[in-house]
Image 1 (cartoon, rainbow, N blue to C red):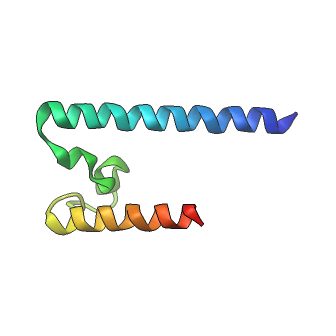
Image 2 (cartoon, rainbow, N blue to C red):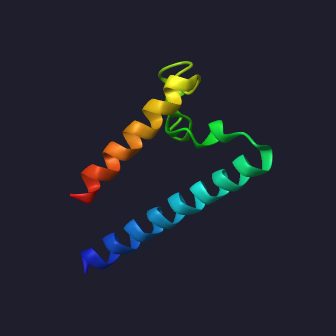
Length: 75
């Protein structure tokens, strides 16, 4: 019986995460500001590390971390 609730919770979290990314993508296209899609910006890491979402290297590291996490989940 517990697994039914855990599965529902996982699906709910996944649904809202996907919805959040769709809204961010739409707003990024609308405002032509693709910095909003930077992983560090999405996770609000600038609260702990100021200026982390700024600059070209931040964009490179953001994509690199995203790919690494994808590969880890793929296995």
